[in-house]
Image 1: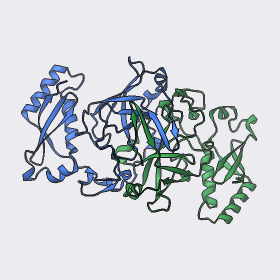
Image 2: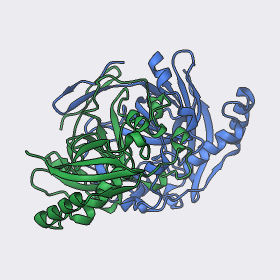
Image 3: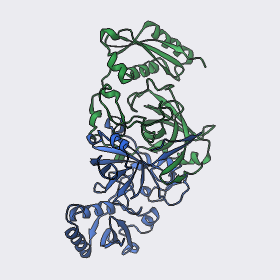
Length: 258
Length: 258
């Protein structure tokens, strides 16, 4: 590992590893960690004996901070203000009063659940985490243990983000159910069995992952929104879904070709 | 503001501002935020109209994350393992299983209480914060609103850091009491009046800010530790204190010459 360099107020950092996440594109990713408990990822640290030493004792913690780089956040320029999807896109707030990736320094911060720690994995230490909201291939700058006595402020006042999280009802077409069952039979229940994968898709869609302008234009329940179709990449397939009634219906899973 | 550059896994960030903190040297700084509620600082953001816009809406939040650079952490090389002062210096843990500054990428993360936000301050926006554990002149990379529904995990298991925080009794010599009163009369109660300053010193000393080897060698209450003297810079003076009985006694405040 090289050391950070600095010239006046500039600082250079080098990724210590990379995220392997179930989220293969930005669309569909929950906007905060912990909201989709079934969302899994692995932190692959660089193959460096010092990093094996550096994670000793981590396994005693139930939660971790992942400090990462928003490496693929569309526009390369930061935006002084953004329209939080949570507010339906109607209101603007300052980007530093939000958790948007479009920040002056595109550094992300997520608390995740630590599932397993493999310091001696071939190719570098691996850390399995859940509850993630992080895109596949994201560079990791730092991991830190979560310290509840310092990091947990349950009664903090959350400004505009006090707006309740509305969950949209989700169901599955017969074709989507078959695809889930077929995939579970083929891959074995070990990795992403039927129930786990179904829950993951439900948790993702319930939060309505669409951009604010889509939410405004096509609210579930409205006549003109019916049948509007969407899709996102998850694990090794595309999830196709549409607006049906007051919620979303999953239409099918299409395997991605590699 | 310039944009971050990247070459493979390297990322360059530019500070968006600097911390003006009551803590003028590392010795004495609490090892986590929130432990010393009276510790105050101001985030001075760069004088950039975009940053004025970027903090709009921040005032609705009670707590903030400050993402900063450990710019003055002694040795410039990172250490794979460290001896947490919390464990008395006897045990080693991996640096990534700790919040030590000696990390591969020396990025710090502290939740602080937002006291006031002045977007239109001359010279750049200013944000007053308390409960800090951050050294004066620290470069700030990012600020983020604290979102309790995502960031607060009160029941998280904290591995080796479950060790209880032991508080050491603190008293003041008559000379130190006079110095506090004299200073309060001189500066007015507005900034750091008698009670507030006294509480700040008590909160800092109660946590025993000494390095692990000092704690091991000179535990309060032991005969050989009696009268061992220390000092640290706080605000605009040196606080002198010694081990007295089972605790610490503040001996006096000495004004720093500028």
